[in-house]
Image (tube, rainbow, N blue to C red; front, top):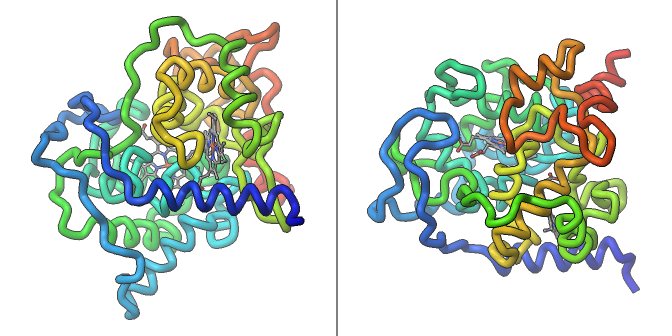
Length: 321
Ligand code: HEC
Ligand code: HEC
């Protein structure tokens, strides 16, 4: 008999293979992306783009950097350890090596930058997106724009987007937004959804699971997960991701209401501090979290979220001292 985590790994792998190649569902996409720059909306003509197969990465100088970018994307803590403070990998939220439509695929992102983003109020270069995910989603530090880490990731994105039109929102970009639920998202209902549909893989405490020292199912909250500055901490973003992609291999199986409820439950737990926090929870909330979909600084079950967070930076902080 194999240990439970190995069997789960095989099941998860089989499930994720089953759901390959994704045919995009006919979602009605909002015309303005999360960034806020008005661009051409996804039209029926903008058919889901199919990136080239990984086996076609050329075996020369450029291909070697593309391959390096892929390695960083898949095993971030191993190949970019100086910038990672938790146990997540890029691929945990950008599924199928960054290829899957509706899981914020890299090919769709590549063609949208530079773009204005309301999150930080300026025109962002392509490099700033992976940099931001290192700082927040990976609870780490932003690699310099000209570092080999960013150059390799940009090369991987460029290679994947070859022959895609630029400046066009392709079908499958980002996580397809969910309409507001009929009922206000609810913690108790969310907990029930979690116990039934998520705990098997992500653990009863959302702590994830490892096998042979390797993270197999990523943590959803706590010190090893994304921090309070990450996009996934917003209940609406998490609900959209979950609806389209979770439980792994069964994306689309939860109702919209269940997705909102479980997203609220997940994000009602403590996680590492927002790196932009300068000492005052109220000020940080007002400046960066002033949104009804954002639980940072709100009281849940008698506790103010963000008040008992460990400082941001995770294992990088430990390595410093
Ligand atoms: C905890 C989940 C998570 C992890 C881990 C993560 N990201 Fe992201 N990433 C997001 C979210 C959420 C967004 C915003 C997507 C949206 O709202 O459409 C995003 C956006 C992006 C975008 C822009 C996508 C677009 O279409 O504009 C890029 C590029 C990106 N991430 C790269 C990375 C890289 C590289 C890593 C690893 C260093 C990484 N991400 C790790 C959640 C994550
Ligand atoms: C069959 C196992 C399985 C089940 C069940 C499952 N997940 Fe996941 N989940 C995964 C795996 C594996 C990944 C990482 C995907 C990858 O790296 O390709 C993941 C990634 C995630 C992520 C992004 C990474 C992170 O840690 O933040 C979130 C959020 C998430 N799952 C939430 C949920 C929720 C909510 C449910 C229940 C509705 C759920 N999952 C059910 C296996 C599962």
